[in-house]
Image (cartoon, rainbow, N blue to C red; front, side, top):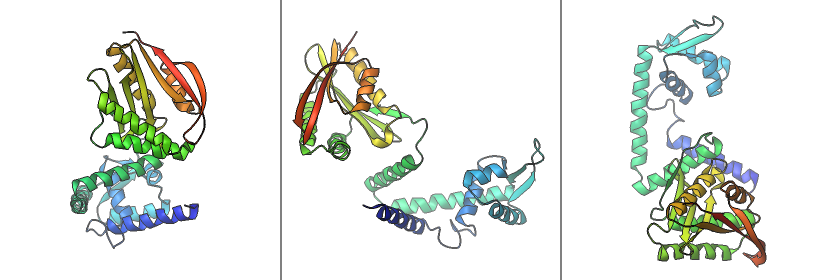
Length: 306
């Protein structure tokens, strides 16, 4: 898809979404207020008072446009404008009691309208919708401090692990379907052979969206193997990989293994840095032709202390 096609697709979605939530009419949430005016009322409702300059910068509004809106709000008795008590050069604005009643009505209507929209979808489709919306938020406004939650795989997660490995490694490294087949076998062997307390897997989530995965499998009575470390591109740099590897190493240590090993590819530099941070050391390398091209496979080892 070309850049022009991608831009057109985003604009098409924007038109569809604004039409769907009903912001193209004369008012929003069955009110006489535009989307911008309703957003201003919402922002003002979140605090006792706010500086007009701060509000303008937060919403990216033109000073003249904001002044005209406030003039209308003041005439309607919704806001009170005055000079700041700490800096006479600055102006602060606050909602009046009437303004807060208007906000309460807007908020009630917004909840009702969105509930009606969501009610047109079943639970599964609602989950898909919320996941897609969360993805858009994260891509354009990634959180500085994301909360990474680790949990055991849920139904469907193992298929997701295979799918995301196959799709992403084809996109980023040009791997063919031999790699996806290998991942499928690893996951299948994990399910068939896992033993409670000796084998485990984790899925990392951010805002309830899968962001990564890792497996710890028994290789022998004394050796555990770290397998299938994966982090979604949008979640990189948030500590997901480190948290997954730490969980895997801690589990292997608690299970009584004396060492942990892993097999990886030399070109996976980000993963190698995570392994080095965790204390793994490179043991050997082997050149091969696999996954549709030349590869340099590596074996790493970490002694464990119980």
